[in-house]
Length: 132
Image (cartoon, rainbow, N blue to C red; front, side, top):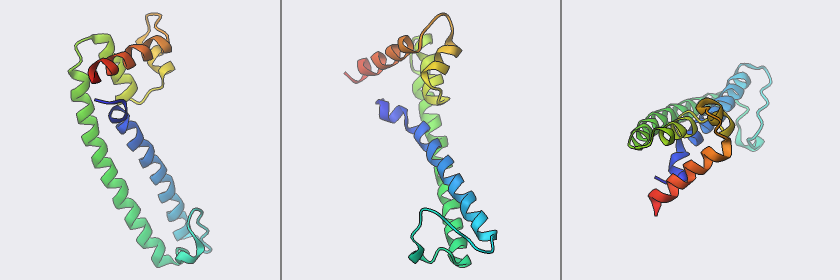
């Protein structure tokens, strides 16, 4: 599995968070007496309540689909991580790619005097070895 594939769960979660923020903005605009929405051209007609309702429905569906994809990615990552023979490497991959921790957080959870750089080296060497 490539680094890009391993990072897909993290990226999907970020997209969902961005979409949820956008949804909250649209919902606030829909209940406002004078909606002002950033990021959309004014010529799109999005200031009208019907257009807002359509956009909100579309965004809710999009978020639901991404959440479904996240669950599939989660299961795929768990299966991959479970296939790693070494316990330390498995823990590194779980914290980094499944939980989405940064390297400092990974090192803090692993403990044992392991530095973020040491753990990232173990991770990237493992990936490089599997790809080669």
